[in-house]
Amino acid sequence: MAKIIDGKAISKQVREEIAADVVEFKAKYGSAPGLAVIIVGNDPASQVYVRNKKRACEEVGFYSESYELPVETTQAELIALVERLNNDDKINGILVQLPLPKHLDETEILLKIRPDKDVDAFHPYNVGKIMIGNHDFLPCTPAGVMVLLERSGVEISGKKCVVIGRSNIVGKPMAMLLLHANGTVTICHSRTENLKEICREADVLVASIGKPEFVTGDMVKDGAVVVDVGINRLESGKLVGDVVFSEVEPKASYITPVPGGVGPMTITMLLKNTLTAAEIARGK
View 1 (tube, rainbow, N blue to C red):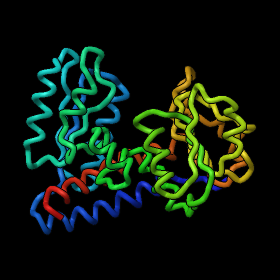
View 2 (cartoon, rainbow, N blue to C red):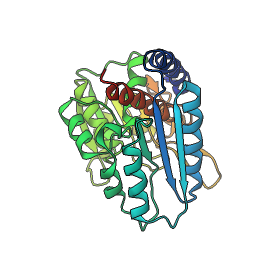
View 3 (cartoon, rainbow, N blue to C red):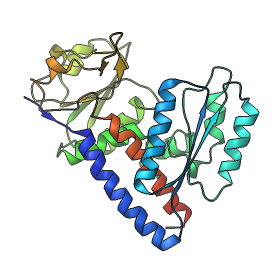
């Protein structure tokens, strides 16, 4: 029977630590770390995320601004807003909520965010720093996974780690962070042959493929640590991960649930990145 890794409890703990750091920060510098969130269009899921981010900023004592732009916003208008925020000393972190409407070029927009305000860690400059292990910020979801593992007492060093998924947002940086923690890492994806066999060798299995209940019990070895990054809504309205929890939980030693596992950590790590950016801006 697996030990459930409680993302809500660990996230609460980390947020309390951030809030205490913010009190010190304000006492020292006379202002709070600042985060600006930009959303274009009316995607319901994105709107929920933006509301949650605003609430999280209030909870830890950050200054925050949110910009809800109409779907017809042009590339030039969005770039102008990003550049204004780049030059605003009150703002330490800039986050552009993805996906953007089809007519906007995400790559160009993300490149316009100043690397020292790129609290999502998507800018090629920050991606390169993660690659060489000399980073200021980490992408929020993989960073959250590492904190969950660390605070649950899961040892990565020397272990066989398998990541299913190769996205720039989760899969690739996740593999890099496990590698930096001295794991032996395999990345699997839609073209991987003998996927089940590879997964069955994993001491630590991270599922971030975006397919509901893709990882079944016969893909997991006894005693493996299973991290489910997926969040998928079925037609019934039920939220499920990329792992069949009922099949995998009896075999695993540790497992993250969906919801309540990795999800709560993502916004928490965004707050941590924003605090780091504010400290760097003050020359700490």
